Length: 232
Length: 151
Image 1 (cartoon, one colour):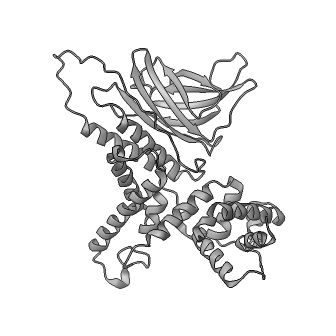
Image 2 (cartoon, each protein chain N blue to C red):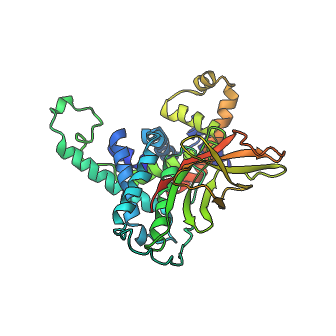
Image 3 (cartoon, each protein chain N blue to C red):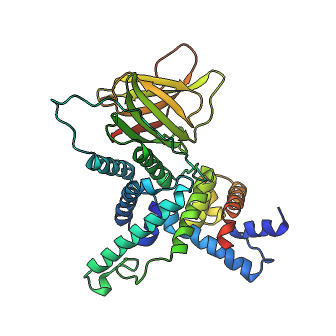
């Protein structure tokens, strides 16, 4: 890094620097102004994310064709042509959370929108957020009813890779607080989990850090949480 | 997207409304989205249009006497911020969000709250030298991430 770069950084960070030109100061003052703008720091209400996912789920239900009557035979299940959406956001590790979680919600929406049309299997979607143990973590998941159970496709960033006897465990929980394990993994960037318990009843999702010490119960060290919302 | 909406509207409730509408509109347009594109700028463009629509709706709705309207009220301001300013705010917010939490806190206290290094040190219970080094590291990262804004 050049001396001038150091001087520019010092000026930006509030130090008195005499060697910068007026143009350099003006450029850096513009950046300072943006850092002073409340919009750079404002956080939305914590419930906004859920409202967005619910609004999108409502849209999906409105666009669904009218279901056939109970007397008619259900249609043959069609082969699902599911395109995996390639998340190409340039800076995924957003700590402030507002854009990231909402963007994760639209990733979920795009996955849903680009999947095959009716008759589609029962499906849920959710945004997942980090807890105080992992404040930078965020992502999304789809939960799809298949013949062998519920397939959960989770994509999350901001969680470190675990190894050497440490791993992640995913759970679903129902309204009575009953926990069901749905899979273990070392890295959360793209994980496929399975639940034999119905997501329609077990809609609270969490991921805990666990030790491979023979104790299967939840450690209580939750790093990622989310609530599944129906979209199909 | 909330930051984009807040920049235009300057009001939390309206910004949240605009943010929700942004994602619903984006969902409706999802099939037309080219997956080879970056999602962020596409969403930001929708957020800006939605926020401006809300801005104009509020400007038409306002009937209070001029003197009673708060200085930042959208109804009082004649035009929303320029597109370039809105996208700059979004870019800065992204860059700030990538800072480690301890550096982000120093930058926020320094720029948004206007504290000196000494005041930040006292507030956080750390040495002034630690504040200065965190500030320098943070601004070095920001300068690297945001240099293109001045191109």
